[in-house]
Length: 355
Image 1: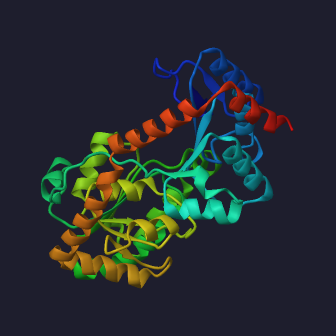
Image 2 (image 1 turned 90 degrees about the vertical axis):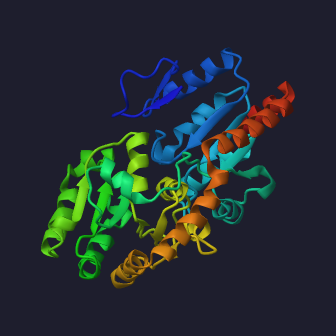
């Protein structure tokens, strides 16, 4: 079953039996009824405020309230300062789930402190990563048609909340030390941003790079890439950077993937990065500190041993995050939830919605 956004794929793969149109409230109830009739044992709800319909994604509750099967809620965003409605939506979803999953200790702690969730009801399962090899960047650069020049990489949907401006601002200092260095921004513009302003933001980044005299050192790969090509780009990077200005960010798939590739990582100390890059697994720099960011890049590009050390520690830490490991954790949660479910417990949960 797929949550269908306006720009979603058409057609879907054969395994998708039903779609929920994000802004059609009746679809949520219909989807729940369909699952109830199919003998499904447990439902996995992936929660992110920006994808579910209704104000603050409240339509997810229309779906959950109609389910007669236990569900597990995976929370991709836990806001530090939610609006009252955002807080109530998440609190009800967690309270009525058979289990709730977050991807970091910081998220679990925040759920307990800010949302009043019982910590015993929260599972921590890390963000999954592919099983990439720990390799030197040289061969991957050749596969991408790059030369031996140092590569600093970011990837993900392009948008103003990613802090790419800071890296561009740091590039003049980096080029003084490494005249052939380049910063690669890999990924298409976020669909919501495309709808609201087209490619204006990307154009502003181009213009700023030109104004700083580093246009030839900032390279945009403006498209979605498949997992194989993404893996090659990660292998080709000498340094990976997540310069996010929002320090409350509770998870980052891009940072997780970079760790899985054994990259030396520079990041702002948002909640997820501070946790994942602790104990010498990366370098943290305050947001907006362009000079400090440049210094971090120069330090790592100048010191092969330090760069390799960061990469090894990140890679070692990521072994518990491999997709098969994550799948095994979810399998155990689903099995426990299914074994504990009885008609009485499900009826009690449904009654809590009605009460």
